[in-house]
Each structure stands twice: as structure tokens, then as C-alpha cells.
Length: 177
Image (cartoon, helix red, strand yellow):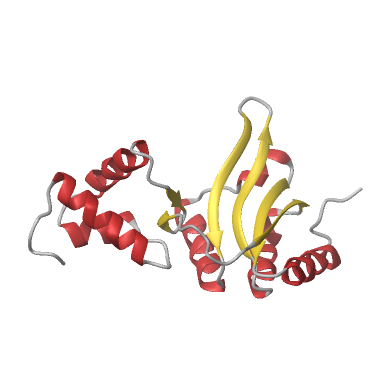
């Protein structure tokens, strides 16, 4: 807990520094404790920082500063369909192969494409997401589309992507022709 309350630009600069230094998402609650302000002030700060063009994204695990990759990453967009009860197994399968799940995308009949940032790369992050879903009685985006959804996935090597996709295929989670 920071005893000193940080104000305005000084607070936002400090938040930027913390986000840039962190390899994991930082929650609004954690940032509010560090800066000795309310969670709502942090939400407003994030909006102001995003409006200034800083590459900050809000995920279910907190805020991330999108670092520019020094190492080339490989990405794929995959189409999946499964029951809600299989969602955690799908995510665990991907992260177990060293794959980062960047987002989930669904096609809504009224709103068009809806995308939620995930940025999961560990079992712990998937478990935390699952616990938060249960605690809030939230539903998966894929429940809007009979289980059909897309994921952008990322890995260090093409083999990691192919191995993870193969594992999803064996489990029947891939939507294919």
C-alpha cells in the first residue's frame, strides 16, 4: 500500500511504468492500492492513457501494456466449436502446448464481430478466468453462437501451433470443413 496519494499525470506516468515493467496483467484493484486512489480513478486513467495512444488493453486478468516483440512470434486464427463445459479444457490444451490465447471472437447477429482480449499463456490464468466466470455468473461469448468462436493464438514456433491445433482436432474442438 502506498501511503502517498499519486495525482493526475504523475499517477498515470507511474502506472505506465508499472505496466511496461510487468510481464503479467495488473488488476485495477492492485493499481488502485499502489496509487492510493479508487478503482474508478484507475478505470478513468486507463481511458485517458488509451486515448493518448498508449497500447494498453484490458483483459479478464487486468491491464496489459502491449510490448513490441523483439522475437518473432507466429500467429494463427482458428475456428472452434464445443460445449461450454469444454471451454476450460480447450484453453488448458492450448496453453499446455506453449501457445498464448490472444482473444476470442464471435459473430453476433446484431453487433457483428465481438472480440474479447484474453492473453492467456498459463494454466493459472485460465483457472483464474474460470473462477471469475463462476463468481460473477458470467457466460462465455461462444454461448451466443451455439459454441462457434474464433481464437487468435500465438507461439514462438510454428510447431507449437501445429501441435496445439492437432490436439484440439483430436478432442473434436476444431470447426473444420
